[in-house]
Image 1 (cartoon, rainbow, N blue to C red):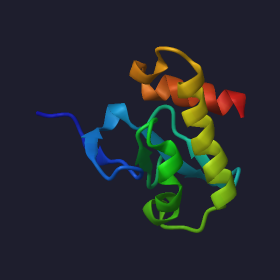
Image 2 (spheres, one colour):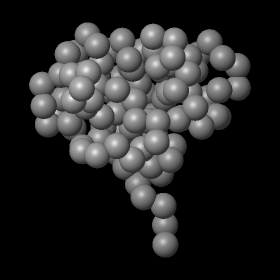
Image 3 (spheres, rainbow, N blue to C red):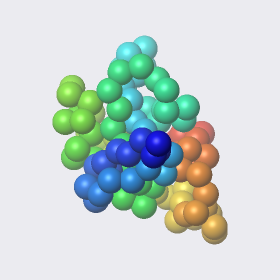
Length: 105
């Protein structure tokens, strides 16, 4: 049995779910957040860490709701900036990188 595969919003390539960052709508905060456990209920939007800045436009469509584009852009750019500023992180777990980004923002 193979690992679950998802499509990246930035590059439109499919990859193993574990190699992508999952974004979900947080009802309590009324915003898009990183799902570090990849188990939050509801629809998810997936993006490679390196493709994060290009994935902004597809988040609303993937989550099937209106989202604040500025907030999503800041979240995705934060994820990307963590990777660019930390040597060796591009090969690290996307969840660890995403967790670092959400703590910095």
